[in-house]
Length: 394
Picture (cartoon, helix red, strand yellow):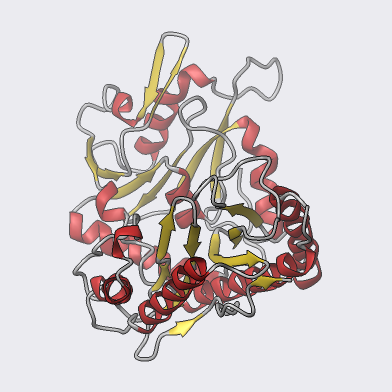
């Protein structure tokens, strides 16, 4: 099945990002000295093809192959037929040639069956001139149907001169440095989270379940996104409020907005799988002195960490800036999710998440999470206020 690429639309990625990512794949093949890359994981299929996998590979395997020389191709389950066509029409996929297999025998328009998946993949690799190739893979995904094992490692049994190399660890770095189109979508996602946090504050009323407000706000974000973007844009929304003195940094279905409680509302939106997470701590009514102290420390730590996201500095400086605030205030024992961070230098066009927090049983959880574009002067993309006055429900 061949599907023509469609023009770029607002909220989608265009050919510039396709070419940028294809260049990253070529560089990876050069470094690892492989002839092709074969992806079966959801994240890398999306990254390389611009299509969102809609079935689980452990029961209905999907593979996309990207040769060093030649056209990429995909092998998909028949259940993905409509999803593939919809994505192609809506936002443009980056692989023209896909081939489908069937779960059940047909009398007309017959397709290879699931149990023939290994042979089907072997046949297409042979057609692409890859039967003697060295192919980099993103892991060792397999499926089992009846008593038949399916997966790339079983394809090797049919093509004994084929060699597979696991390059999953090397693939993890492919998405570190963003293209300008990707950054634009992350900005859009962050803007939706900013809008959603403002709606949460407005919708919240004493006595309401926090989960109730979460669902209302998620629906409002979907409605707002429909106003901002044309039909077909791939949107995902998550909204959940965590923490109270009783549940610490968890969530319970009975949590209500009540005076004296603290909350952490996490809102994540994604446009075409490029997203932003915006978390804000807030209070219902006047906080206690202890709550205000932890809140203020988290605000200061968040501001210090975001300001440390400077090109050329080690990534550990970001978490280190937050930790320094907690050490100075004597609250470091409550920074339970603190990590030292990597010593790898931050790079331009890198987008990072900054989320210092303090968690004290009986007092509450306090956490701000932001998305920051690394630069000579870091750019904060999640701009919801963090001050106590702005985040107190009256």
